[in-house]
Length: 91
Image 1 (cartoon, rainbow, N blue to C red):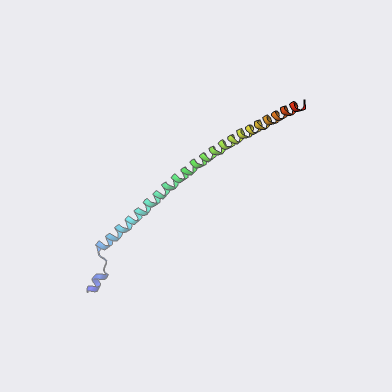
Image 2: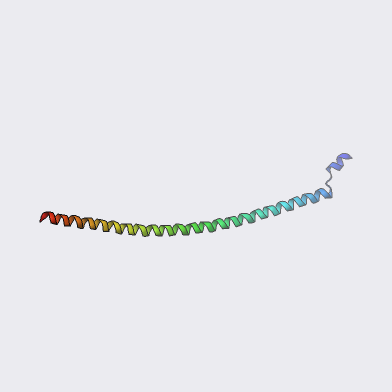
């Protein structure tokens, strides 16, 4: 008789089991919602980093263009100075 009592599920046990299962499901749903929010935030951050990367690429191209102009200015100035010196030496 004692063994039969141990094998029987009481209403209290059943309610506790149902409560635990409901709590587990709620926790899983909350976790999924949190994961979705986190994923959306990371997507927004990725978009912002891509925009920043594009800005840096534009700035880099702008600086490269200005650097190239400065190099050409320097080269033409040096050629002019050398030509001027050569003309003075040849006179």
